[in-house]
Image (tube, rainbow, N blue to C red):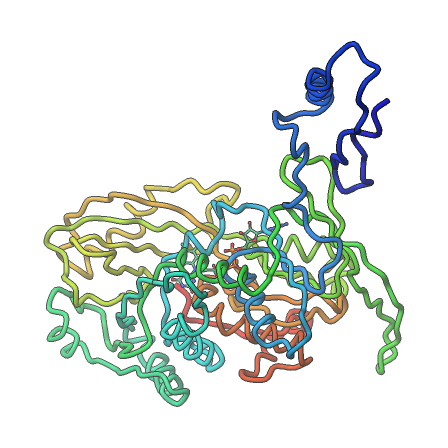
Length: 486
Ligand SMILES: Cc1cc2nc3c(=O)[nH]c(=O)nc-3n(C[C@H](O)[C@H](O)[C@H](O)COP(=O)(O)OP(=O)(O)OC[C@H]3O[C@@H](n4cnc5c(N)ncnc54)[C@H](O)[C@@H]3O)c2cc1C
């Protein structure tokens, strides 16, 4: 009779092993027999196609040196730099696990694509300086033979930060620091503002800072796709599925201060494939937590924050999704092409969106106003009450405008100090973070990816000292506060 038609490979899906070779001795001819078998197969298994019965090409590999959780801009940047900086002949196997290849909720594609040099911390200025250089030379990094060049649709334009009397000296000090770091930023008086931007009402503005180089906005989707294409050419593996569990080994240790700690190491990642009831186990040496707004949940899966309060073991990764609205409006009498990205004295921001007198903008809510983050619905009253009055005051032409579009996205919000988390966890020793940038992760992704890769490959940061971004600051209570967040 027929040899085995189907064979179940334990835990890794159903594989067809081939039909048997029996001929003769039957009342049915060979073609009818095959057709009968195919019908039987269809009745046992879901799906229409019988060859291949179950395509396994989408499954993750059984082993990967590095598993990256999250295929947003930060995850892909880490993958890029791991492959780029690996030593010749190392051939590190890198797997990116992304649960949604449409990126419908990913911050990267819902962001407004801005890059600026004007941060309150020197390290963030350094990150921006490297990132803008990366974007400028994108095709030196991401070119792929026989493929068209990456077009980021970069729109060079300065950021204009407005300060009231109360915040003017802080702004001045920050500009001094930004210049020391090498950023090209100038200060402007209200009179200078009025001359350069006559459409602006400068009431309540005591001082402004304006980026003269290395600032603007670009298309995040193009960057993501450019990275993805490059990574495929570099041999990085991709899999669509959700990381649901980590299997760890533990080791009890006593620190030099006599404290007993449990060090953990993840050795297996479970990936649940879409439309599957099973998970696929992937053995690995290193896990990168680049799950954006959801990276707090990924940390929890690894047991981070599950110890007694006040201990390192009990310290959570303080990153959570915070909903932010972006509104797009049309204003026929609005400012022209010379309009910069404006951050108003009260945090309302706006900029041009393409040509044709379209603009976009928004504002972060106060802690008390934080909207429900379980969905991405837009609150149009927020524009009416909290955004538009300030737009209309600052740019009189905006008194009359028409909102044409709006969307919401999640900030990967670090509730502790609104800054990134980079590098390994002190107890789950092979989980590395690239997350928590709270509204500036897109622009910093090129530099952060490089920093994480340096840490993984060399054990320390090589180019920018990212030590202040380490997780341990949450336990020590040492804030590394970034104040220039809109
Ligand atoms: C409205 C808005 C405007 C912004 N504007 C700017 C700006 O102008 N400039 C700037 O620099 N930044 C901006 N940001 C912030 C920036 O978008 C983020 O900091 C950055 O995109 C974070 O990248 P990421 O890769 O960490 O996150 P994401 O792009 O969200 O990617 C994380 C991915 O992880 C996946 N994932 C989560 N959990 C799992 C799991 N268990 N298994 C598998 N996959 C999983 C998700 O599906 C997601 O695709 C803005 C954000 C918003 C919302």
